[in-house]
Length: 284
Image (tube, rainbow, N blue to C red):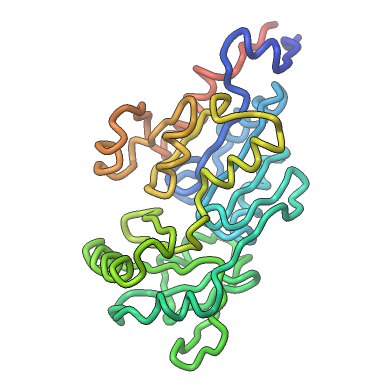
């Protein structure tokens, strides 16, 4: 088999897309939170054709890296919604934490005891209760939970604060309370309807991706991006081509009605779209 010799110049003749950015859960990963074989093969072909690959997720880097490494290719890794950036060699490029006093102030809200509260830290995540749903996101545990009593915790420094509950309405109430008490102080997003996350004000996936593009002398006009959550909103809108997953919340699809909705993550729709619309053809 003879492959077309690909360069950024040749790709530019077909389209201006040079960077593929994708979320993980509900987007690139299947229903088992894994990368399926077909998706892996498409991304390996993207690498062979010199596309830059950026994974942008709300997951912690210790949690995300073992999953994404199964692609077996170089990639930039944006984690914790942009609070961490790792380069193509998985060396840390950028990091920002929430100071202890900021987290303490945020947690001063009247958090319903039914809500699971998590502080993301560098090597462990501190939580007020065991949560089977959260544990299911790690088929192999690389980022370990530690049960704590927040009433006795002295250092609240965190990468981000994470709340989860099966009732979206409870999280909406908590969000409104926190925003009312801390207007303009934090960045926040629903990565899933049952996952509410707060970060430092400057933290966002789009901001992190912008830093990578600047390093690579590229722009958002060179980006195709895929996502399914409100934490993907800014990067989807900034990209030359923003694609929303069919399994994304209807409210997000309605809000971003100007963007194309593709199939769901179970159907490996990211890989199928890239194969059909982005990859250059391979000839015999």
